[in-house]
Length: 422
Image (cartoon, rainbow, N blue to C red; front, side, top):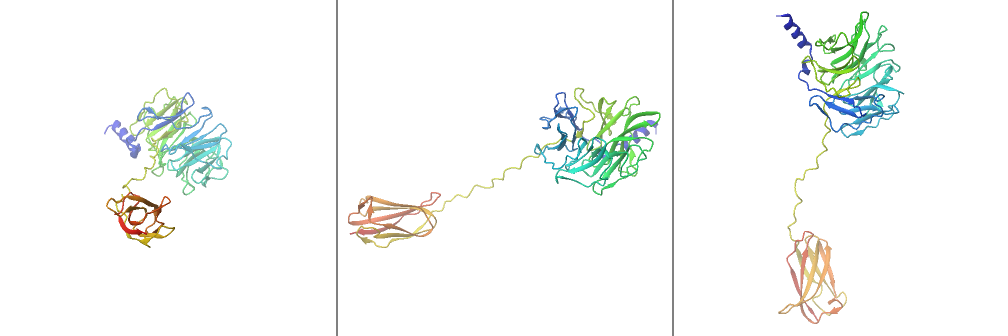
């Protein structure tokens, strides 16, 4: 087997296996007009509209973004911390979060944890935006941990530290990875010969990047390194030719959720993205203002609002006729006078009732009607004086015809009774 084949095989084995063929990331940046923007490298298009993140001053503005793209933590002109939830495009209340005068190294997890330090120098802390309070990290209350970076799942916190650390460093800057679930140091190995700075983590924290000098004495220019924490001890991955130019400085790493895309600054000027699984650089548009603060995320689509409750069925149509029963009168022979008689009947349901009075003759001329609305089901009575519109009925034979109509417009069969006016 040739040397070239052996080298290629070693590189393939070292690359993040699970990340092979991973989607190219979305890259955040602040454009020349001071607008916070997102560029999707996979589709080579701007994300429109950009998240509503106010940038007061591009030079002083600091932010962090969750790897799933949902949360963006940022500072305002007063150096107060805010958190935008893109699920609703609204800010999440953060009571008591502003404990540092100059919060730096903002980072936020997919779970809404926010980590930061004081002026990129000390006192790393982690705040739970859902609980509205700081969480216990296992770091000393007064510490010099800095350059905070959370894993996407919020389980791990990467920092660097020189003094007042969870473990001795020997006097140089060392990387630390703190497990926030157990509140213990994971004992990431230190390179005693060189200072290590600016860590970055992928979604589950398996891959850790950082920068350190090539050689502490002969070549202090820093290079970017990538480690697989899946083994013990973590293994340094062999990155392709061109990643670490011997004539340039490569610093400020950033990883996507898969760990397959490694971003960094070349010579502190040019932002580059290296795809580990394919051993190639991505072609970035030259007109985008990517810089040392640019971050990676996955595409994010806010959840759709819940659908309206299904219309399973139309309300049932009432087609049942009301029924009037036992239609009668208390007196069927009377002379007109107040309350001389009463119509009596029973209804099967609530309904409007009309009683029409006609001459009991060949032509049956109508002489008047009684109307009552919304009478209840059951027994009902209507008083009758033998008069309509102030005029007494003439003596003779009459017929009273009752019909009931319910709220759906269904009409009962007519019921009649004969009576005599004396």
